[in-house]
Image 1 (tube, helix red, strand yellow):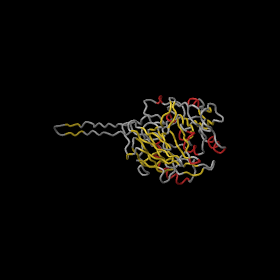
Image 2 (image 1 turned 120 degrees about the vertical axis):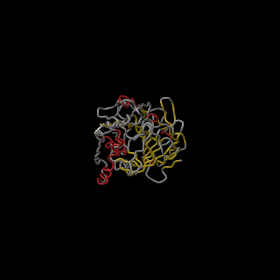
Image 3 (image 1 turned 45 degrees about the vertical axis):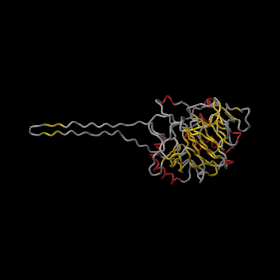
Image 4 (image 1 turned 60 degrees about the horizontal axis):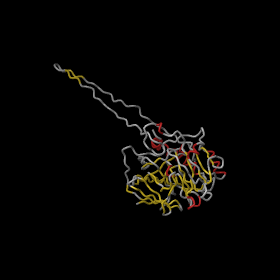
Length: 368
């Protein structure tokens, strides 16, 4: 049973536990997974004897078909035939700038399985590019972390965390977590790139960063629900998405020919470098997860509250489905459901996903 199904099965208990636990963001959540034993339908054979005739009723045959879970790549949901196809390496998270014209084009974003965009200080955003199934060379510009990173990124199971460092409080929060600290101040493999202006000129490659893997690094598991092999997304039509992330205005436009969403930012194509040149940023899914932002006690910066529940909007296949996200511990996946009563999962298309986390406020999201 995958983690999102387990989360759904335990939510009724978890909601009560969360309500009683106060504000402890490390409160333990007990997940009870119940697996039904195989059911065998008993067959009764009755023989009725008449004075001149004996009739025997043949046993009825009952066949039960069990549909197995689909084996998938953990961070894209792509169906695979065998677990051996999954790369034996941890998730690698690279913090990438998204502030002003000197930060673009970024490098490597179209090779990331998942990109998470959160609001930071100065009303701009920062990206967490999560790599596992693909490589990128170069990747960057690599920038500093935030204390809020710990809250959302631990779901990737002891991931490598590549960043340019941070203040003492943030550094302590990162090192006290189970993420594998690849601080550029103390880790080989980073370089300053000519032609780019500091601080937006620090780069590396995923291969070089994966070479820093330690024995305590984990392996990622599935963090989103996905549609079945024959399922198609259903929902209201939505081919253009407008998202306000403080001062960053992002637009995603759906292309039916490719089945992808393409990103614009500040009225222009938002591009990323690849090993072959430059191309527009795209995703197979855009998930808009509204979050309440507080002020982090460690660094005084915006702090997305990514544990609990709030509205979510799932854009896939040119449609939108509205629901809620649910998450009760830092290591939980992001549960995507239609509502708190039915808890039907909102499955994604297999592929690359951008997880947008704007403020939970009016006028931050619209579509047409």
